Amino acid sequence: MYSAFNGLIVGIFYALMALGLSLILGLNGVINFAHGTFMALGGYLAFTIEPYVGFWGSLILAPFGAVVLGLLVERILIRPLYGRDPLFSLLLTFGLAMIMEDLIRTIWGSVGQPFALPNYLNTPLSASLFFLTGYRLVLIAITILVTGALFAVLRYTRIGIRIRAGNADLETISAMGVNIFFLRAANFGIGIFLAGLAGILAAGQLGLSPSIGSSLIMPSFVAIIVGGVGSLIGSVLGGLIIGIASGITAAFFPVAQEVVIYVIMAVVLVLRPRGLLGQEGLFE
Amino acid sequence: MSAVLEIDGVHTYYGKSHILHGVSLKVEEGELVALLGRNGAGKTTTMRSVMSLTPPKAGSVKLFGRDLTRASPHKIAVSGVGYVPEGRKIFGHMSVHENLQVPPEISGPWNIETVYELFPRLYERRASKGGRLSGGEQEMLAIARALLLNPKLLILDEPSQGLAPVIVQEVMRTIARMKKEGMSVLLVEQNAMLALQLADRAYVLADGEMVYSGDAATLKADKARMESLAGVSHAA
Ligand SMILES: Nc1ncnc2c1ncn2[C@@H]1O[C@H](COP(=O)(O)OP(=O)(O)OP(=O)(O)O)[C@@H](O)[C@H]1O
Ligand SMILES: [Mg+2]
Image (spheres, rainbow over the protein chains, first blue to last red):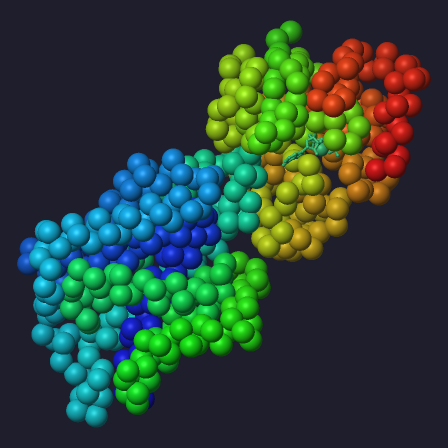
């Protein structure tokens, strides 16, 4: 129970990351290897501004900081590669990830930084619920809220409807008068927002290190594959499943806690190559 | 009269294959122009060149007096072009109502309410997924979606394709009504007889080159040419 819960918390980070990666893969057609470093950036920005704006202030502001940088990257580096072989953007974001990680090392140092949480969030709720801190509740609540808001936007707003339509047929929405340059930028921004948010939430739980992003990105890709490429709900589900599985494994057989993620992926791919919710149509 | 669309010497390629060899075409204000030609003649490619979905390598596309060659498709659309693509390209996983929320609404007589009035069937089916509609309903949805831009020029690529004759007549009546309300129309058809019922003028494409341009009535009277066009339209 306790280890499953630990796993759930990590699974939340995977889920938020996988959600953003999925969005960006769907509409922008980019496998964003730099997603993890945007996540780390969110955490470090929060770390830097927390002394001035407090924990809650940093939680709200830092993701937008990551978004600003994300939008610049999209506009300057990624946009020229749209419509080309996906290999180009993959290589670009791969290189970008290394550069950004080194920049983070240069700016904030290569040793980890503790991310100070308000005391009232950091104490366990009770002795029997020793693993349940206020922070973990906040983390779960924020994730539910943000994910719910994202799905509502995709379902009910014009921009969300266009993102869904564009996922299916980008060319046709542009011929219908939709500015796909703007739409792709907005979608990229939403994905980076989720990464930045995951970074701050993870910083409070796991602490900060320059490689926090690169250690979380591979499991997040696995989450997409397990959940089914093209399904956002699948990405969330995949993230939670591999998080919980690796949490439980960590308690009983610690050396296998990372391997288990890939074992799950292999099993899913053999039994159900399209992933758990793949092909069921987007967002259903 | 001034031209709403003027295509001049357009050359278009798919990768290395050269499809359009200097195509020129004009649609004057208020006119209904038919673009005919057999299977694979290059009709759709001509429309894709206008919309800049497959931008031409050479030549120019002028819309409403402005040079919009190779402009972004959305700029071309909002400049006043309603495009009903070949195969309709409905978003099959989204409801009718959601499909209608994709294009930006440009003010004018057409909005979601008035297109529902035009096609009451779409209103009845507004909650159905686009992929569940019949071919005729999908065609209506594609036309409705184009009308939301309140276009000055309506481009339809084979609207009759795969539809039952009654439905085809209904679609043709709608197109005639748009013309009557002052819209210019470019109608692409393999079915020459059908298009010539409505058209003022017609062009015929063959292998990426314009082989006829002139009065619709003159073309209709040209037995030899009509036969060569009709041969495929019935097979298709
Ligand atoms: N995406 C593509 N890539 C390569 N060649 C293409 C592509 N689309 C069409 N073509 C070729 O271009 C030529 C013209 O095709 P186009 O679709 O414009 O013809 P069409 O007149 O619209 O025919 P139809 O009446 O069948 O719709 C054809 O020879 C076709 O094979
Ligand atoms: Mg065609």
